[in-house]
Image 1 (tube, rainbow, N blue to C red):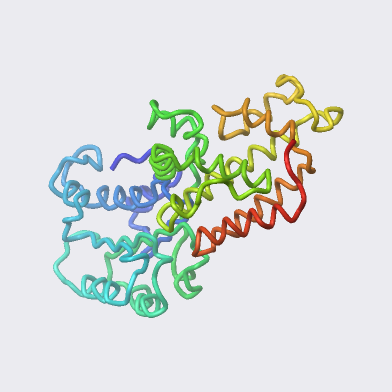
Image 2 (image 1 turned 90 degrees about the vertical axis):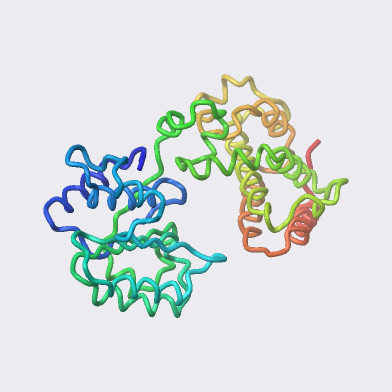
Length: 332
């Protein structure tokens, strides 16, 4: 498995395995899409590799079977319709009851926080009485959502986002704005680029401008925004609002928001924080004409963040714009 970054985590896990001290239950915690699952599979490959040289070799029968999810020694669990159900946990328990394994065997549970209550309770049996030579790896971006009884039985391994230079090395042809929006997550980068290719990013910018003007817009938002792309729209809107807040904050105090100060006065540090680097000029123009205090942009950010929990995109966005119109603010 090709894993970029996370060198400290890998060295610790590898050394513990070599010394026979690998914990029977590990919890890989960290943001989505940064390689936690790949690390778990790489660890399994390292332990079960059939090559006598550098491990994992990635090419032997064992390594390939793990990669293709065909290994008799590695049981992988993934959510079905956003849930891990008790039937899946029963399959894990059956796997752990099997005999005749010569080496370690692994159970890799991706998005472990997706276990419902029944599944989590059933899974405790595997954690309380794990067979010798077993390593259970729980993977979660929201570990606090796991029951305390599950969390307390696992040794935590914390993963951090990749550095932007590492993301750029993985995807050298991707634009800078997308790399910045990835926030150190290759998985998020792919989602961002796919959504942008579908026009979501540009539409999100139009929605932000509509909100700033306190208008709903001429188009029916519900015709293009639905439950499948709703989160992508809100993510892009948050990125734009965040950038506007940074630019507004960086304006010189004597500009009074009426004219745009030369870009050099905004400082390189502020521009280094911007995600939408390809649209800085346009965003600066909007910021220079905002007639409401910059903390109102922060207000919009809070609104959009809250809307992430709304199940009806059309009603949520309509409500947001109506709320903005009642605030009485606009752009010149």
